[in-house]
Length: 92
Image 1 (cartoon, rainbow, N blue to C red):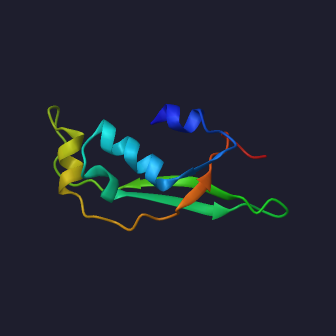
Image 2 (cartoon, one colour):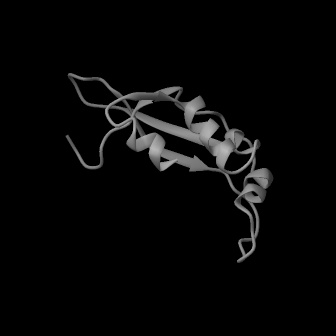
């Protein structure tokens, strides 16, 4: 997941790329439980910037709990922002 964002700083990525990475890392159910939140940047750029990923997980977390099971038990959510720009940390 980290590499997806690092490799795309100052570029747009769509939510299907993000959700696909969650599926690869955790389970095929993961993508339906990830919400991508974006906000419009200030003028003059009007960039649609990714600001948060919300993961809908559910279950007791113990030392042997698999994250895939937490995704499987979570409720499905709307996909959120379809396309957003990855910004480097901080303000520009």
